[in-house]
Amino acid sequence: MTSPILEKVSSNKSFEGELAKYKFKSAALGGLSTNFNLFLPPNASDSNKVPVLIYLAGLTCTEDNGAQKGSFLGPASSQGIAILFPDTSPRGAGIEGEADHWDFGVGAGFYLNATNPKFAAHYNMYTHVTLELPQVIEAAGIPIDWKRQSIFGHSMGGHGALTLYLTSPQKQYRSASAFSPVSNPTQCPWGEKAFKGFLQGGIEEAKDKYDATELISKNKEPVHILIDFGTADNFYKQGQLLPENFLKAARDAGYDEFQVRVRSQEGYDHSYYFISTFASDHIHFHANFLKA
Amino acid sequence: MTSPILEKVSSNKSFEGELAKYKFKSAALGGLSTNFNLFLPPNASDSNKVPVLIYLAGLTCTEDNGAQKGSFLGPASSQGIAILFPDTSPRGAGIEGEADHWDFGVGAGFYLNATNPKFAAHYNMYTHVTLELPQVIEAAGIPIDWKRQSIFGHSMGGHGALTLYLTSPQKQYRSASAFSPVSNPTQCPWGEKAFKGFLQGGIEEAKDKYDATELISKNKEPVHILIDFGTADNFYKQGQLLPENFLKAARDAGYDEFQVRVRSQEGYDHSYYFISTFASDHIHFHANFLKA
Image (cartoon, rainbow over all chains, first blue to last red; front, side, top):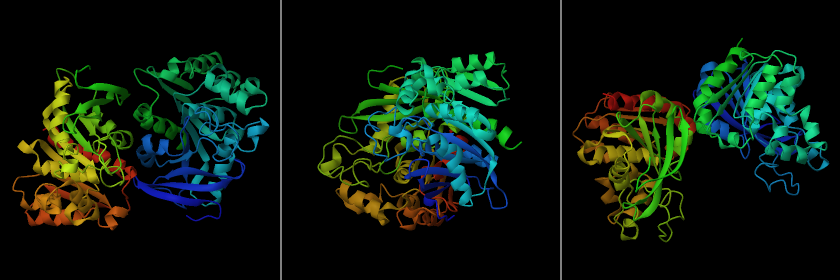
């Protein structure tokens, strides 16, 4: 696949499909070069565009963690679903202090569009994921059917999956799922720090746009959401994730367990050893909607 | 699990089992502290010791690569098989030059016992894997049935799996398999460099002990061996792996495709994206013998 926009950096055959890494200069990220991985199942072809599931990774991660450790490729291959793995932030913006914290800035873009002028030229992961990546991948002629998208993620990426699902224009995602998501970020230290840094309006500005618990409480549309978290997850214990807040808000808003399912998994932690255990389950959840 | 010998460094629940990292001071490795990972399936208990499959990793790897990227834990859990992931060399010996090369020394112990005096006190991965690890794990009361062991590995670790299988005392392994193994190391640059460095007798000394192709040609016993390699593997193309030499030697020695199976996998490379594709297949191959 050649393209004037995308440069293919590497390609690995896996589960009869192809996991390819691309790079391109991202308008959303202020012209910086960014990478993503894209898995295409073996049945993808010019005459058979396939549905796509977008995986948003967590703090400190890149486009590689989910591809390497998630155990997603096997079930995606069987189901005939592509998986897109974006990076977690712009890289190389050169903003003072952007790489000083593991939970803010580089590797920690929180899937939002920054309004703080210091970050607004580069930290626009929301637009990058919802608009730009589909455009550049479509323009390269890669056989994905963008009318059939779903989204999932881990931790900060679980926050991203839920908030993009609940706010993206034209309902572009059919379903959302998350492993250990940051579910109510205006109420936890990670979210507070991110919103105060990235948003001119701080935490107040985030409530309408970037907090899944706030969003589900006001949502009026049918939803398809699955969440798993582990009871031995230290970040859960520290109150960074707050999935119970999301669940309560969803029930209060009238969503039953067929629309919003939040599962507590006994003894599991925050790692990819947890994610990989339920990877196939999440792929099959999305397949119900992507292949309907 | 507490033990006067082993210290548990971390524990992650995965596929209903437990992946634990341990460290201990290794006599075989000259008293250095070494790590290993051990996955126990959920059916392991004091009243139900489980069989074990040992995974030997390749150049530059540690005990983590196979555990994180191999996609072994799911099928091992289903089959009720433990997986032991040793490190690939001693670490911290302080031998001059031991960390100067990615393909020799630290991260590249080649699963042999060094006879070159410079390395002989520390580089004894053969004894570490075949003798010491079973002893210390047994002494800690971890419920593994060491009468049911098999072994597999990748690249340098594939070399290790095949040579340990063909040379270990008392036929301690029931079956061996390998992904992209270094199959005839006395005939390839990686092996030549390793043997010249680690062994006083150099390449000649290696022929009787550490070359799978040489060993299978002289072997008289029934064997159960499975090998997969990818046709797009650059190390295969460069002549580092030479699985065709092993296959020819096996056929010349009278082993048929039921005893020695070497499969060429079209388009796959040397990466864990290849390994994970065939992970379940290899676990099931060993399960035939481990659960017989």
